[in-house]
Length: 376
Ligand SMILES: [Zn+2]
Image (cartoon, rainbow, N blue to C red; front, side, top):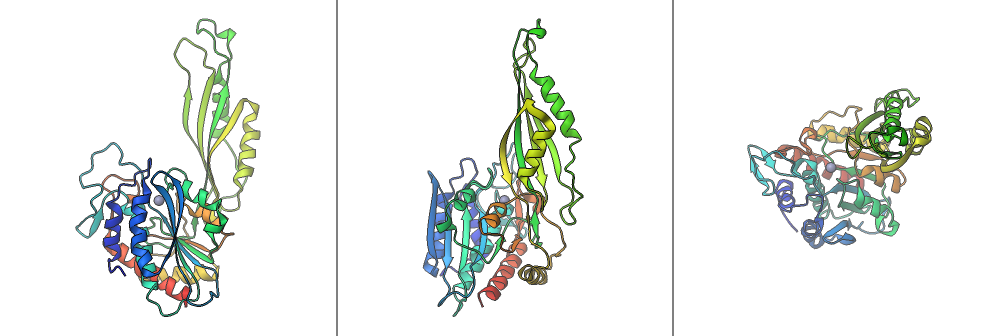
């Protein structure tokens, strides 16, 4: 069995360029499978396209399982490098000044590496009362594409009694995150020569009416006690071809972040009712909010344990971003789900991305102890 520590595994993962698009996660995950299979993991693939796949690796219970599996999950794709020039190598896995540097070190190859190392350690246990499953996904950064495909394949997905999603939280054990509902609102009109606007029907006027309506959009709920209020941002407005034509199309892009207890379908219906028939709604991303009650027994024990091991605070806060947990928790029928990983939240998607190596080591010890207790 591999004796690489989690920092070395992080470096190994970072050496694969999995910038999405295009992703190319398969070679990276092939390398991971090569670590897990000799340790007794059953390897399953879900092919998603050329050089793209989800990896599901299962360390089976010894004897018959007494509870549903513990799932550890993370994505191996990363965002692009951005326009700014990097001062450190992007895909070498450079370790310097107590940090590992490069694209994906925070979001979230360090978290994936901690999952892998903790899972490998469980292979040495003489007895395990449940399966331990690693779900390592592709395509998260473009809208959870990998796990959406997995949710459509129940036999491969299997079940989960509890789940950890290793997204960057600076090792803080978080209860969940907001949902996301992104959409384009298309307003159609009739074009005409700019010198005769009365012959046209100006799509920009319709879009402006929508903007005015949405600026004061009321979700009709009090702020959530943990997540705060839902929000609505108007991020884009594209319209018109040239100055001397009446525009026949105006498209607004909006980003709604929902809270636990809200249904994205209900929000969509409320937006449609508010803006009226002048806009066609095209949904781009639809992710439910994720929240496990803090008095859930597994969550309560696990958060306390993780905080004790890593020294990170276990407040009531949730993450600002959304994750694969949105899809997986729903697909699994809502097992208790912890969002916790070693990556610094502030470093996700940044130029000169890094993760402190001590965060990775602490996180790995926490996952291993959580898994040891679950499998006992
Ligand atoms: Zn991520």
